[in-house]
Image 1: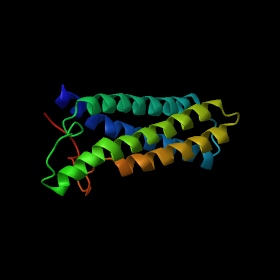
Image 2: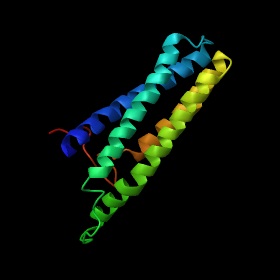
Image 3: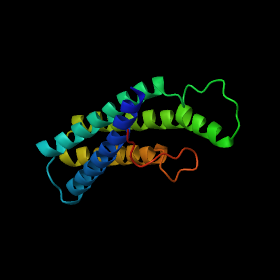
Length: 154
């Protein structure tokens, strides 16, 4: 179960990042070219928020069963263990929840805006901020706090 959730969470992170990039590009082009907020623009907005919510559910399920997070009575033999434990238990969790809340606010407010340009501007601001926080909180292979591979496998 743990390995399956880990794989799904790892694969879905790319869907989150790519959908956010697509939504940001759509919003940027909508502002720059003065496009109408079309049905496809709305679909991209909605799908991006949905994919991030799926990632949140996968992440919370993984958080509940992860041995890295449940490391309660460990001997701090190395700083790396303490660092990874702190990263996944607090930093990763908090930043990702904040990012998803920001993306959700952006999606919900963009849906309710009156003009097409305000929808695009709203989407661009909130989704860009959400993407920035997500990129900071991902445990990249080069991260000093918790390095993970680009893609998990069984």
